[in-house]
Length: 133
Image 1 (cartoon, rainbow, N blue to C red):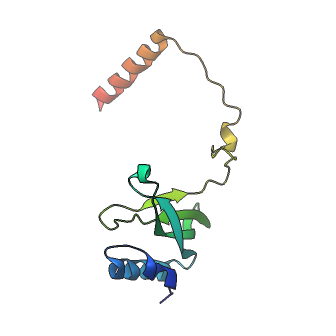
Image 2: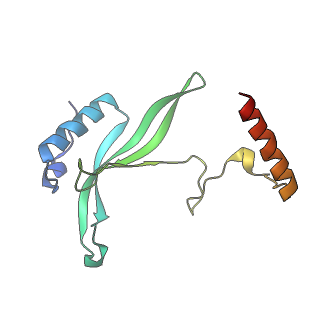
């Protein structure tokens, strides 16, 4: 089984043994991930107290159109895990420095203006199609 690391034992999870076993299972199932300690603000940010949590970062393979693609992810286990769900972040391949995602086929997007009449006619057509089914 992969080692989670000695830094994991110093973290203040209430169910440390359970989380260690759970993280070890995930790491053995997904060799593209690694466990890293991460410092995050506590729930009560006015105290400015930071907590060290375990994060899993790396790549998870997924099938897309018959090809295997590695999706870059970060999964962060909250200090009160498993009572609260993990946070999962997927890194976009086309992100700028402001974390805006740029989708190539939408770069030349042009909004076509519509009026209330065409919207209502389209809505009525859709309703009649639904009623026929």
